[in-house]
Image (cartoon, rainbow, N blue to C red; front, side):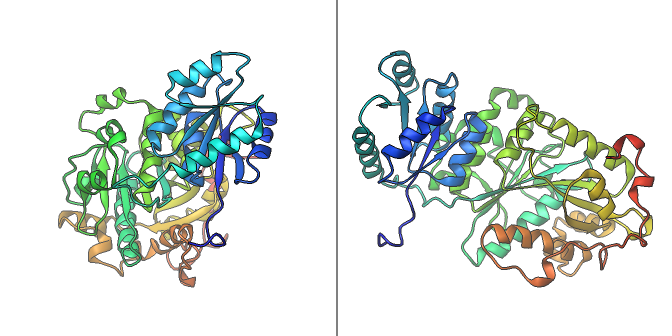
Length: 421
């Protein structure tokens, strides 16, 4: 690759001190661009996964620096970590050593030292044996307004359809079923999952091309699968930071991950996963009870810090039936979410497919439910730079988006406390 076509060198700096970030940018101006990174573990790991930096710099004057360094090393063991601090006070240097960070930059020193260290680390960083070129994969999270709204069914059909679509381009997809009831997707896909998610988190340091290709269960389509363990108590043995790190680490091996989080009760983990996601959809039935549950979930996921940006979540209306006069557009407006998909009520067709041990997407490509997946697949395709079919651009409600006259405004159905001024 010529210098003209080589991607620009990126550096990440996790420091709450803007002056230190500016100093680092000036020192590395001839080498690349320095980008600010969040100083919380989940946000930091997510940013590394998104930007694929050559080096990450962690300011060890920050109290949480050791946590950031450990999380980055676990999730991205081949990305060099450099500590920032001042030798005038020995505490940052000692903390960096205890965290396993061997390179330390004194912000009171000459900028030439920074450039020399950065160049050495870049030169010393060959692609690890057995490590695939980073795919910079995408992450889509599926939430459910309540258990039973059809998230597992959507996740399985969507993931297999995405895998079949991506096979032609050599893309690899994964379905991470972290929803409840546990391992529903394994039943829908007629698979047995030997490596559950807790195992994956515990083996994070072993991740390489061979491990990922052999340890994860594979569907006939090529889709990789992992689920929650049968004993949910095992989830207590892992930290949520390490779980999020695992999701971000898997970006290097899968072009796209579909993560089913319907029914997952820990809103802290769900919130951190949403911050790491490229797409997030809330699946909601077209009825009042589901709408009330959706509002409660959205309130629970609202950041405690009022200055923190809210997660970007789209709405998928499931089990839609125009005869019920419950408008998808109006529901999206009341939940204050963009409408990204409308799936028709197809309980009998979906049930017959499950009873045959098959997915509806595999056995009935022209079924209304399968055809309604097209806008969702098109939306995900755009994340990979594909140009989707024009017909798949907009979600439709049973042959066309409902007009205001065709459906009763859901405001008349929802309790008053759901209405927003």
